[in-house]
Image (cartoon, rainbow, N blue to C red; front, side, top):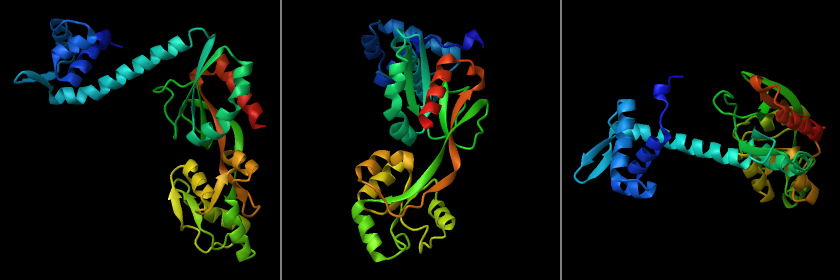
Length: 295
């Protein structure tokens, strides 16, 4: 890492503030500095980057083309720096911290409702949980652990099996009653709800159970399980939903099984940890707790 290319965060703050106001004086007021100090900091940044970041137009300054390209990266860097410090302060009284990436639906419907037992047993571990919908590079994103759905392959990481996934055809009680009254196979001509990332799910279910479906690919499509669940609750159709996502709805009777024929999917859930953090004790504790919850 070349130290000459490491930016001074004070200069970056001056640049971002001046770009936002398009005025050095207002930037100076916000940062409690003099206009001369702002000018010097931006000049230092221009010398370091070799870029002309501002152009003077009449009595105000505007971003140059190079400054417009530079600004989004600077803002992202400042936000990440602030987030780093907030996380450090929040974990200051804890013995350790843990940053976890989880699939949105899995986190909301399975992980979070069970967290109280982990927190009660490990009050000295500070948790940060963020949603990610697809694999990422642990080298670029500083997560300690991730929840992955698919196959146990993740570059630079170790995958541990957590649980299989089983989907079940469900609907609102009202729609279910009307479908059962129609015939022996209530799914045959039912309005179907689909997940855009799994367009063949109903076709696979039909083949698995030799249940004929007139239009296995027709119906409303959504890109999130949460929206499909809402659509099923609103009697818009029959949904093939993972059972772990609808535990509360099945328990309360808000959703019911249209036909008791679950189907295991070909993929599964895994706990993934980066290879260079395999000895991190807090991540190991969390992984063991998740495995206990899954069983």
